[in-house]
Image 1 (cartoon, helix red, strand yellow):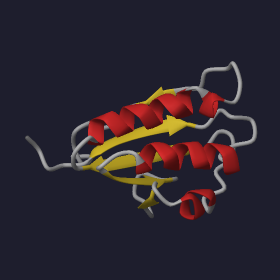
Image 2 (cartoon, rainbow, N blue to C red):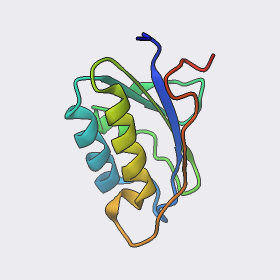
Image 3 (spheres, one colour):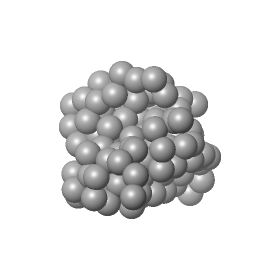
Image 4 (cartoon, rainbow, N blue to C red):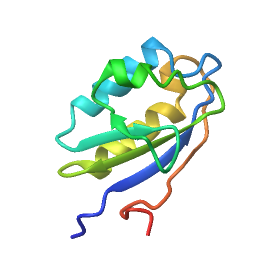
Length: 110
């Protein structure tokens, strides 16, 4: 078993970007996990806790931006999968399906 974080990337295709409702949905998923979950707008960071609605809303990520996820600990892969699914479904706000890509799943970008 590896101690390396699970990492992934998802493209925001929601027309209004990462606004209040999607932020709350994202943080709700992160808070339900025992894993340490962080997000960023760039693969090199800065990283913030995905369990903090204030920090997540602070990104003000627009449509077309990439969200990077990183998780470590119990349930890391599961929470990453749930977060990718949420972004891929446009945060369950409409009928369109977004794009997502898993990068370096199971390693720290090595």
